[in-house]
Length: 68
Image: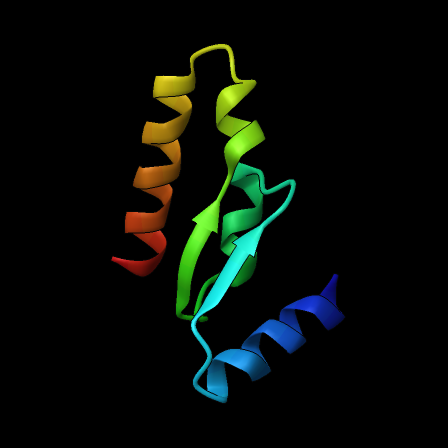
């Protein structure tokens, strides 16, 4: 939720390299826009997709669009 995003932003502002993991879906990525996330881990979202390769490509595209 909002409190989690605020905490992540604060950690990033303190100089921590932030990793986001655990139930991450493609639709969640825009929630983190503007925060320099070091790593996203989206294991199940990619593994359980109908086409894991296409799911990985979608994550890559979205990350490039949001953080370019």
